[in-house]
Picture: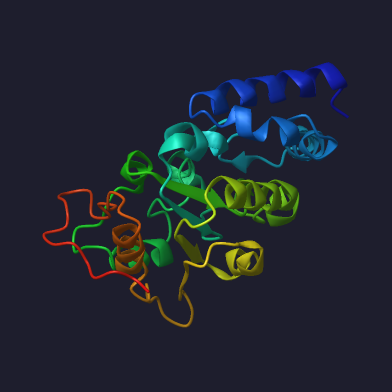
Length: 229
């Protein structure tokens, strides 16, 4: 079993990375908790027993370092992800087109698929309900469930009326924890349908007099959408 000082060092490094996106100040309570130590302990034990996982402990925090906390204006919570070796390097942001389902979903945004990395600079925080997965094995929904629940409650407090996009069966389990009135579910089974989520988010932002999200990464919307009610 990994000893205390080594776990402390891993968490200290996570804190440093989260500080890049101004998230460490908001998450310090959980980062100091036994639940966080338990998450790190489980991941370390997986690695020590030869069960490699992706992305790495620090890479999985990338959405929080890429999307600055004071710039967030939309949240995506998703359970879609890949656990394949071939896509291991692309898992830093959950909505990368690493699976057929994610690629199909991104095609509902624009004919030329967008780069979800760029959504972070648009103020879109991507929350993954399984921030790591065993290579060619299980997604770590249970390992990360305390983190996910904490994050959802924290952003509820920080952004009470922000629009949310909820993608995937596991993500929908958090639907009733989200306090914002603006929650848009995306259908992924038996077929992919964005349910106009991208447009609805911008309708909400229009009503809130906030900058719209450029989902396609190429240009600003030609005209502002109607207000969402």
